[in-house]
Image (cartoon, rainbow over all chains, first blue to last red; front, side, top):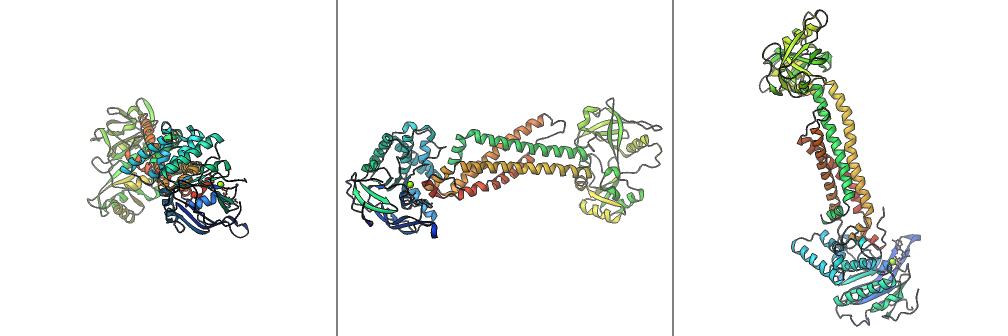
Length: 257
Length: 377
Ligand SMILES: Nc1ncnc2c1ncn2[C@@H]1O[C@H](COP(=O)(O)OP(=O)(O)O)[C@@H](O)[C@H]1O
Ligand SMILES: [Mg+2]
């Protein structure tokens, strides 16, 4: 962990990285919570480029600004300064309505805690946003087919009609991954996807994430504070006190926090 | 639709209980309203269901039949007012009668046969045609007031008993919650003399007026009040609504009804607010992954409508069952209009009170999904 200004790290070493436009470009992102004496600088002048299909691990201790940065990248939170471009779309100046539409169609999220609607089955959890957005007729039929296919791919066909409470932690996380992939986003953001799982299940979930991202060529940012998880990524970016550190090649991260 | 129905399907007990509670409350509203209508009918059905367009009271009687008498020169003056076609005497009094072998109190109305003041809701038999015949309130048919029964006015010492034969039954013509007979004015006079043998003259309680074709009863009533000293003309509807007993009964009931009308929407509003708090995490998640707020609000309102309508269906069923039981002899009948109006009023109020929950949904900040907080006020 060294240089305080790694700014652009768009030359990843990952083999699967495609030569297309970057999936995510963060430029000079700064996020300040609160004002005056209470102001907290959660992210400071962070710049990061994630190539198409690239898997980036964002590694840092608790409170370092990982979730904040991820939320900014996903259009959930407005940065105080800086530019966010996702799949060529500059969302920095988007209205709340445009951001809602953006989140629905362009990115996938797997959050740290609540990821599923408790009163919807696994399949309905995949479908719910397209239903709420008013999918009708052919589009609706297509969505149902896609939900079934995705669940099959994630090995959850037999669980399609189960409520989240009837699923194991690993299964729930798989459904969450399916939900994040449902709209075929170019970028999926994972916030500590294995923190609630035991090591073995956590590794299985990471393997699944890696396989799914690779086979689709979907770029992803995986937030973690666990160095054992970074080898599933093409590249690891460190964050400490809101400042991005040097990028290392996958698995080469030494030291911990 | 999708979200609203899925949620209700998975929480049948919770939503079922609310619909049940709403159903019971709406049933109570319907029952109370029917009870009120029934009671009012028992108090002044005789005024409501008689044929006079205008009833002229003595001004000092304060719209109370029992305290009203019309003097002969007043009667003559009333008949002369413009717009009056016929002005006929209508007498009313409460008497102790012998009916079905038992002594009971009954109200006797005496009207001019063929003139205004005749009962309008005959359901069996015919109107009286000669002296000694009467139409009775159908509600009391079984108590010795059925067609063919004779009812005898019990005289005071020195008086002569007089007897009426029931020749017809009319619906909702009770007065003062007593069995009621409509007979000719002469019959009413004999009944009065039976209990008050020294009476020199039996005066009508009110004048029953038929207005000329095309005249507005309200205008004629006002014209009579203005033209004839010491009288007060009231249309049939006014006489009913402003009758002293009715007004106070209506008032007591309306307080209770108002409370019920407030409780139903408060219960639903609170329920949906709590449910919305409980599922704040899920709603936040949905907003975070790109659901607009509109469909979430719509889904909430769909649930409000579904709960109130199921409650209303349940209430109508209960109400119907209660009406089969006769509602304790109060003659409760299921009519579509009160059911529909009550349902609509409750629905509108419930939608208004669910505004608190709606506002909660609209205030969700999708960023909360990243912390799992969700439940922020
Ligand atoms: N809504 C907020 N208001 C104020 N401070 C916040 C808020 N969210 C996060 N922070 C602060 O910003 C810093 C970074 O938080 P976060 O991005 O959640 O870190 P991480 O995900 O790496 O644990 C922390 O110091 C945290 O306390
Ligand atoms: Mg975090």
